[in-house]
Length: 465
Image 1 (cartoon, rainbow, N blue to C red):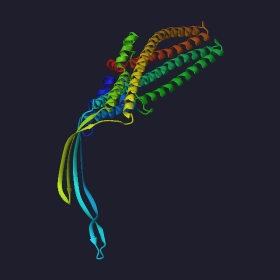
Image 2 (cartoon, rainbow, N blue to C red):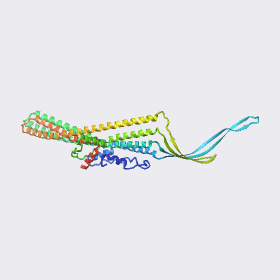
Image 3 (cartoon, rainbow, N blue to C red):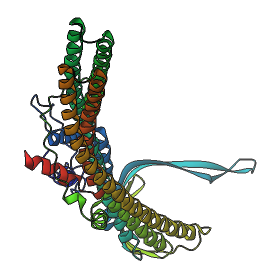
Image 4 (cartoon, rainbow, N blue to C red):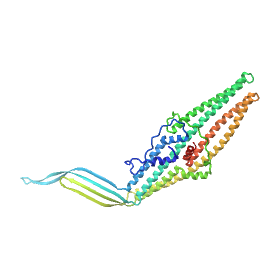
């Protein structure tokens, strides 16, 4: 699955029509194709996002809901066409004639007798009905169904972006943990060299046993940190596998993490970013579509209180043993006048108006939350960028300080306490640099999701390969 992430909505739902038997108007679209197996090649982040969009169950749920909403459009549009029905079947009837015949006895007593008649016949009926006018109720229901379909498509887009962000976060978590393992391995190697140096000086009698014991403790602590980092990496690998719809035991071959992308687009004035979010975010599009559907429901409810006119045509063919065959046809107009239903229609209009007010309030609530999301994530990204710059300065100074401390201790002009402090600061700086680097990557993706541009972010990674 390639191309802009949000285009998955159009490609999957509108490009391939379903069978004409089930979808004569070609509204529904075909279900997504079966997902291919995970390739045994190094996977980049865009590859992982593609796999997730295909295999993650959340996207399947959203696709099914959108196809159902498209079918509802077809149901609403059924009122544009006449309805035709046919009935056919045999009939068996018996007629009893009470006191049909009179009899008189020899004694002058009169009484009546009952007779009966049995008929076998059949009938066939063909009826057609078409709604001519209903004060816009039919059009309003179609508009409501189309707005609901638009809301379902927006929900698909929102789900796609959420799945993409989840995959990106899982990928960054795994790469960050792998980088932490590498940093811990470097720290273990540095601490081991310090221990070897302290132990050699102890054996030569130029250092106290306490220095060697402290070095052993520091090395053991570094090895413990390494074991924890390796466990965290295994957990993160399972989480990434599940994010792309695979069992957590799946072993994924990952391509090296790309260089940190520029955040120039996402560090623009936050007012511009909020404006972009109001235009691009699918949850806002969904809220607007829900409001429009509610407004159409008001028009439909109002039309139920007004007359409607329908055209009807009917032909009936009958046959019976006791009479001649018959064929009777009729055509006419039917005027339906809703007179009184216990104020039910009135309250349905009131209910529909209240739903419009609710959806309008939800739209405003979603708009405000979108602005807050963008503002919060933009602030987080700017903070992460500053932290990364500081972490880079810190690793440079900590590395130089640790090298000097180790050299001074080796030359006998520095204390082992100074060396322990320096190598502890260096280990901390390495972990902070890893955290800051992937913190910026995660903040970039989260802000892109808040603005509604995470598809552009993934496509930018794809083009950079």
